[in-house]
Length: 103
Image 1 (cartoon, rainbow, N blue to C red):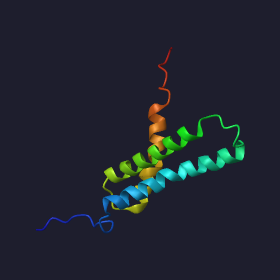
Image 2 (tube, rainbow, N blue to C red; image 1 turned 135 degrees about the vertical axis):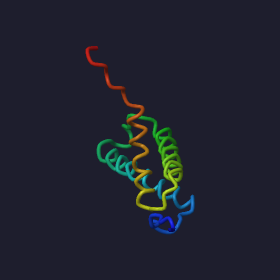
Image 3 (spheres, rainbow, N blue to C red; image 1 turned 60 degrees about the vertical axis):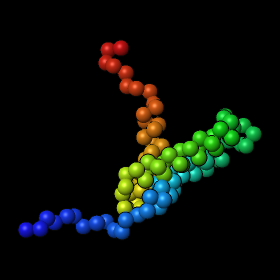
Image 4 (cartoon, one colour; image 1 turned 90 degrees about the horizontal axis):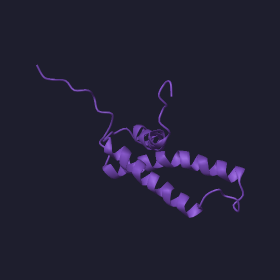
């Protein structure tokens, strides 16, 4: 008897393609954040350094692409999802830890 494997989700994606899907996914929340910032504040009253924010955004995009590429998934939708969830994952990890009961 031959061992049957699960059918493939599609053709193998090149690592660069996975990376680009992850970057696109990581860019989606940032684009929404930029639109909200544009609607709420004027260009002269930004509460942060815009150059530093842009650099941090590009770092998140690149790391989001690497995060998606590292999963080695052949589904474009999953690669986009990995890119979207990476900034949320980092935010959750860097957030305040839960307090202990009774303290």
